[in-house]
Amino acid sequence: MTAVVLYESMFGNTRQIAQAIGDGLSDFTDVRVEPASAGPDLAVDLVVIGAPTHAHSLPRASSRGDAAKWAADPEQHLDLDPDASKPGVREWIESLSTAPAAWAAFGTRVDIPRIFAGDASAGIERRIRRLHSRPVADSECFLVTTKNVLVDGELDRARAWGRSLGQAMIK
Ligand SMILES: Cc1cc2nc3c(=O)[nH]c(=O)nc-3n(C[C@H](O)[C@H](O)[C@H](O)COP(=O)(O)O)c2cc1C
Image (cartoon, rainbow, N blue to C red; front, side, top):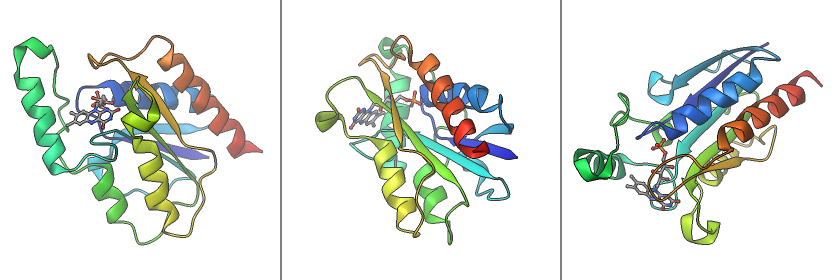
């Protein structure tokens, strides 16, 4: 069995979550963790795909530009990921003609009530479901602070979610 965890990340949090999900999955399968800008790779048994929440939904070119402006402000103490300005998860999904054979969605968002934050994972799930496919597990969103730092315990939660996806695949 093989799996790929695809992510988009501006400031590194979603990348760290993707790597932790990959760690959890690696107990069950060979797994690669890659930016979504690498393009569609459906030749695997499981695709796990995640993005940061921007304006309640998935990043788009304009919100990636806003993220780059935040990172350019030294007072924000943010480093931009190398692939941050490239096409990401929204474009990856738009390029699909069929859904991956097995897939699950995750996101990151600010630790405020979901109704105010929105949730990229729900946006990913909704878009791939339009290709007449259901995820292998409910989507999951991981939390950052308003200063864009992962909330304590979220990497452990991501590892556990990755393990649960691996378990679901071997059943
Ligand atoms: C342009 C922009 C818009 C954002 N909009 C939202 C939002 O609507 N809701 C939210 O919870 N977080 C929002 N955020 C915060 C991101 O969700 C947060 O920066 C991200 O989860 C961190 O992941 P990353 O380090 O992988 O980019 C926004 C961030 C940026 C840069």
